[in-house]
Image 1 (cartoon, rainbow over the protein chains, first blue to last red):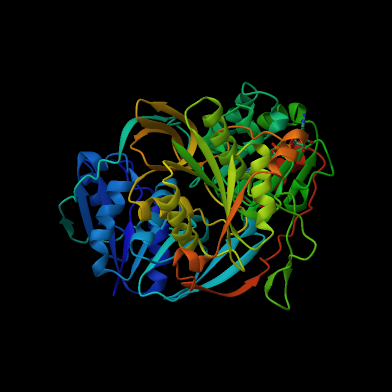
Image 2 (cartoon, helix red, strand yellow; image 1 turned 45 degrees about the vertical axis):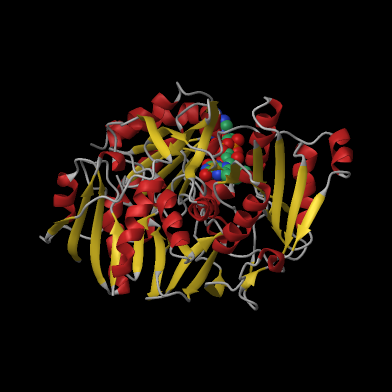
Amino acid sequence: MATLILAEHDNIKLKESTNKAVTAANLIGDTIDILVVGNDCMSVATQASKVTHASKVIIVEESYYQNMLAEPVSDLIVSLMKDYKTLMSPATTNGKNILPRVAATLDVSQISEITAVIDKNTFERPIYAGNAIATIRTTTEKNVITVRTTAFDAATNENNTEIEILNATANPCLSEFIEEKISGSERPELTSAKIIISGGRGMQSGDNFSMLDKIADKLGAAVGASRAAVDAGFVPNEYQVGQTGKVVAPDLYIAVGISGAIQHLAGMKDSKVIVAINKDEEAPIFEVADYGLVADLFDAIPELEDGLNNIK
Amino acid sequence: MKVLVPVKRVVDYNVKIKVDSQSQDIDLTNIKMSMNPFDEIAVEEAIRLKESGQVEETIALSIGPSQCQETIRNALAMGMDRGIHIETEHSPEPLIVAKLINEIVKKEEADIIILGKQAIDDDCSQTGQMLSALMNCSLATFASKITFEDDQVIVTREIDGGLQTIKLQKPTVITTDLRLNEPRYASLPNIMRAKKKIIDKYLPDDLNIDMTPKLDVIKIEEPPKRQGGGKVETIKELVEKLKNEAGVI
Ligand SMILES: Cc1cc2nc3c(=O)[nH]c(=O)nc-3n(C[C@H](O)[C@H](O)[C@H](O)COP(=O)(O)OP(=O)(O)OC[C@H]3O[C@@H](n4cnc5c(N)ncnc54)[C@H](O)[C@@H]3O)c2cc1C
């Protein structure tokens, strides 16, 4: 039997999260096909054909796949699933949106955000904001799985497989795309950045985030935020790190003016090195920090910016 | 128009749970339970739709043990019109929950079903999407704004790169994200009023749904502990350590 992986992309570039899902799929051991659904996205299929462990890339292009609406994309995947035992995707907002709809149509339960593969039918996944790890075994013939990308290294790109072109399934016309507002920053994406500097309510305003931007530019880092900072309108929603935002695990995570609520920790506590800058020495963020600095961020952050000048 | 809002009873978001190593399960003794926070947002949105005259009736539905009646009462105290309780011994897995909700959707002929985007206990984020498949209807997950235009629903969604706006045919399933609204507190008069509101009760057998789980939970363990608590005194020391000790800059 085989595994089908729904590729994450923007119709131009294949996202690294796809390579991470491939690594997880490779642990299952079945042959791996990568499905590229989109519009005018042959360049993505070409990149996918390079991903190590893939035995084939399937591309299906159609205008109504451009924005990955759940209904047409899940119909297409359901039509392909007779040839596959397992459907996988990275746990991106696309994967989370589309895969459960496929699972219910196939009458199987989904396993969300796996962090380990025990065998073909047994997986580990975090529950309760990562405060417990459940080992789950499926009892159905087919499996539908999303992959927590922080738990798996990216598969390399040392391959050259065939690309098969398939036809679209009909558009169910249940919903219609209107518009997208994508911030498209120059900085690395949160989920693939090696360094992240995040601000919380302690930042006090959106303008003050420019202090973090300056440090991010020096370090080649991404900028993130706590829910409180997003809710207050300091930064847009896609900055949110946490249980219900993005889960990240960079080499270095710098938390500035963030208290360290369970829900925030859930999204960053697997970072390799954690720095916390907070004026309250009792803040729970210090319990997970390798390097905690008890200080007022409005003194510490400009000092850090200066300090970084001297190292390069 | 009728809005149905499924509400789940979960461990309160402020509680840090413990794993009982003996039973390999979460220790739930004497733990505060509340309505899943995303479901509160769904309830709030349904009430606002009724207040603005967009819908005629709002129904709160909960699936699980008898204590779920409290969760339904909370939704009624916030302002939902009536409740439905499907009594089960445990909270079933999302696919089964979606099937049970689907049966109620059919009975009630609900037009709009608003759910939380995920439950903060199992963190699955599946039920709404699954329900939309069973209903074969439109789907908008992670909603931060809901408006109406003629006979269609316009939803802005929080996605990885920013925001996406889509237009949906009815019936439709919508799941809530954090920025959709700020749920109200129930006022005392409304809490009193809620006691008189009707809660209909069903058993899974009444709805002809097979409750056999498709997933086996083999064990639940504590995650590896992170060794934290390290301190530095100055920014100079921090930069020096990040460079020479940790080697990350
Ligand atoms: C359903 C649900 C889901 C949630 N999901 C998430 C999520 O995904 N991600 C998330 O982050 N949160 C999430 N939360 C919210 C979470 O519970 C916390 O409320 C939030 O993380 C707090 O953000 P904060 O640390 O920025 O703010 P606060 O807790 O207010 O902390 C601010 C910190 O800044 C410090 N500070 C203030 N001024 C200064 C200064 N001048 N210098 C230095 N330090 C300063 C303070 O000492 C304090 O520790 C969720 C909550 C719920 C209910």
